[in-house]
Length: 167
Image (cartoon, rainbow, N blue to C red; front, side, top):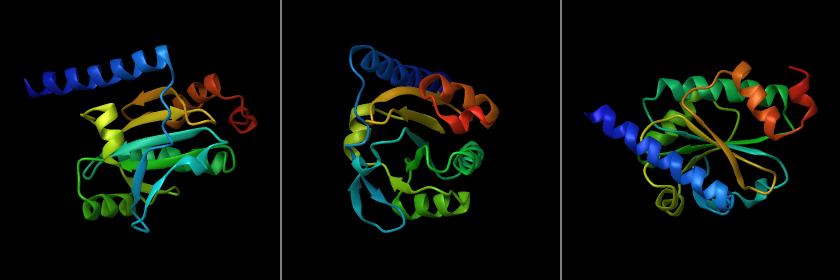
């Protein structure tokens, strides 16, 4: 029963994003989040200019660890072509900072801001990754862990980047 409830919540979240994307692409970079390293609140507007992957993670999530490693590999392959951020949910600052640190990510981690959570609704499972274009508009999403070899064609579909052609 609990699994059905979580599945329904996940479907409703994704339907909301699909409907929003059909009418207009939501702007994802204007939300404010707390930087898990520095403790400062900041918007991600400075990331405009490159596609951005926003990975939701939570403590005690082994699939988030795997997704983070895949994104680290992507950054190794395309160091100047993407922004990637980890957005922590379902935990306090200390537990999210510890989880982010344990994942050894090569990209920044944030405590997801309340305004974004209010707008997107409950995120019932992680990892979920939102893909934004160069202006920060939602173009797609990934549910669950996606291996790098499956991720690259999805990214190539949205972004014509030479580093993706070299895979």
